Image (tube, rainbow over all chains, first blue to last red; front, side, top):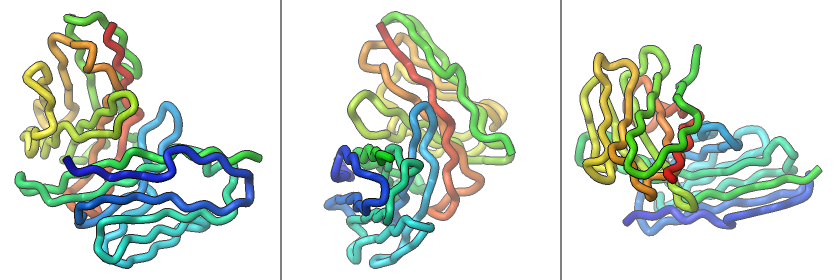
Length: 114
Length: 115
């Protein structure tokens, strides 16, 4: 079973602090997506990274895809209470049916305290 | 544009009963996906429709689950008979095309509880 392990599982920090969330696997993925999910809602796509070593920035969020395309990280600078939520990574693999299949990570629940 | 809508938002039924979940994708999205998260576990793929055809149903857990997408618009996922281990949140997502740069838009999910 392919598994994407995220760490930490839970994180509670003060407003203004920096944090990094990790997404690790022993499998190689074609691409990797990061989502944020709020209670009672579905996941919302933040970014897709495709190339090994790629770095993408979205305001205070920095996403990196590992060189070997097996892992990724999400770094948040100066966290704000609005960043609170469940962060999910999802790796894409080309399936036998001729389409991509997405394998979701175990999730990191972030709480930013004001 | 209206997002992906799912209903009901919650469903509580007894073991052995039948439940049908519905998903309305974003208008014009040919690709429709079903996922579920059982408690404490990660979101797992169930199946993928392209229009009315099942492109990949490798994630369907067993033959108690039946997904349809007649006419290539909305989709239903029926569980018959429901078992305790079917409890969880069922998500639907849709995308315009296939591929890594075709974002999947998720609905808010149906929380299914089997008693």
